Image (cartoon, rainbow, N blue to C red):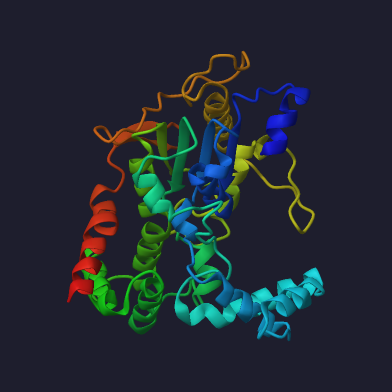
Amino acid sequence: MVWVQENIRNFGGDPDRVTIFGQSAGAASVCYHVVSPLSKGLFQQAISQSGVCQTCDTFPKPLERAVMLAEELGCDTKDTSNMVACLRQKSADDIIAAHQRLFVRLADEGFTIPFPPSVDGVFLPAHPDVILEKGQVNTDFCLLGVNNHEGGFLIPSSIVPNFGQGMDDDTFSVMLKTLVRNPYPVSSQDDIVAVLCKAYGYRGGQNDPQYTFTQIFGDKMFFAPTAFVADMTAGSAHVYLYENQYIPSFLSADRPDWVGCDHDDELLIVAGAAMLDVPRLDGSIMAFSEKDKKTSLDYMAYWANFARTGNPSDGTGGPADSPTVPEWPQYTADNPAYIKLDVTSSADVGLKTEKMKLWNDVIPKLVAASGKD
């Protein structure tokens, strides 16, 4: 971003109107730039699609993970200087393969990644929660949101055995305990599981455990962190929150019909791919519907408007043929408004209010009380 600040004028850009944006892990990276003092002044607007800092939370012991990776690669771990020298001699392919093995080793610790960010005192002087709660953000305008079924199919398919073929009660119990194992202390995990089963209406043998798990997973990993960041940022910046409900036609045929707007579903729509000939791996061309194209034009208008003006509904300075899109209200603490993105988008207030209170208020208090005991 320093390079962008120094060179953007040479490309017709404005260093005082820089927008950074990303999706999933990229969205979490955007959030970390929003809270890092090293990124202050390098951009004015930020977009996080399906991910924030807490989706990819910090890890307090990075050296511990580095040692584990070195062990996978056969490096001496007794001396850190020797360990680093050994790691530097390894090929990229070897490191990637070792990283995948490490991912498997860590599976029992919950849904985690081997090398998340850490509070290093430089890029990240404190945990993102602390920085956000103080309102110390590096952006004047923030657009962020989620797809309405983030845990619907793509991610669970990579972490849950035989996902999509149903789930028995025992597997549900194991997966739910795995989900809460990493971020919460052992003393409160059973209580959290019980609270979640009640809140999501799960009764063994009486409803679909697979679908219930997707809802819990999506809320924990994406919805609740996004709602938290929106709340914390709204006091310092103009915030625009969304829930994307549109399922592209070319995706719906490749997964069960109970899956909603899944993780990654917005990517090609936001990028305008519906107006292009996009090849599949088998050489065929993706078939986009007229709804896909109309929705894509609307989403691109929102994103481009935001980049130009800081307001996704304000088309000032945009192309003459840019569509006029429904009003996207600003999110504030007093009016937690958001937009439901779809073929025809509409505004609403209070995104999953009760579930967000559960994750961001009730469970933290439960954990605190457990710690006192």
